[in-house]
Amino acid sequence: MSIEAPFPELGEVMELMGEAGKRLSEIDASEGAAGNISVYMGWQVDPRRKFPLTQTITLPDPVPELSQGGLLVTGSGRRLRDVIDDPVSNLGFVTVHPDGKTATLYTSPTCLFARLTSEFNSHLAIHQDQVRQTGTNFHSVIHAQPPYLTYLSHVPRYQDEKYLNQHILRWQPEQIVQLPEGVGYIPFCLPGSSELMAKTLVALRSHRIALWGKHGVIARSDLSVKRVSDRIEYAETGARYEYLNLANQEQGEGLSIEEIRSICAAFNIQQTIF
Ligand SMILES: [Zn+2]
Image (cartoon, rainbow, N blue to C red):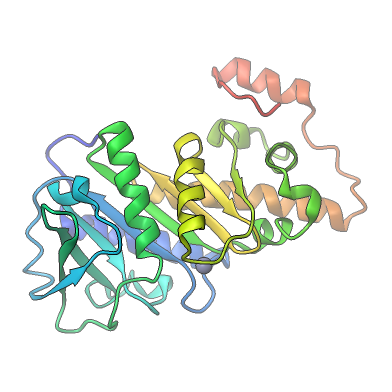
């Protein structure tokens, strides 16, 4: 998918990032300064009215494919719930130089952070991988820490992707419709490590959301940043039902495989989970 002109204005994208951050905070998926959001816009954007200050930054891994446009990114230590009230102070804008190794970081005079999110490496790598694979001109990525999904990743039997999806996607008819590829599962890796980044790239080629074992989730969309927060919320709701069921001696039936297959047939959903 690509977005067609007229492209959204910078202010509109910032507002949607704020709304996504607020919603993630409402579902307890971004305690303290946990979580981060970035959006790649593959067209020319002049950020200087909102972000007049500039500095050159060095990128950890070259991302020349992202030099066609720019990225809005949350600052390190900033709270996702605060973006909505003061986006320019909590976000930075990055344009990648044609060599892909350096970039210009644009910030506001009221900027509240010294560096971009510590997960910026992973975000850049995911954006570049998706642009390379699909040619999209728009891509959003969110990392958040929803408690029920993260808790289930601590229980050994949910550390199997098929088992996880068969159990969290059986509680509401919408779940298989919204998450037909299910949630990718990545066993615990050191946060920010190249191992985690490499496994995340692979998982996000065939899924739109992946669970980082014992840590949180990472999700993406080439349509809108709100789609990403919605997707996290659908998966987290499924995990919450699953947790409720565990706490209630597993008395809930859940939708049967036949019921889920009939939903897929009626809504023309291709899936391999059930
Ligand atoms: Zn995290």
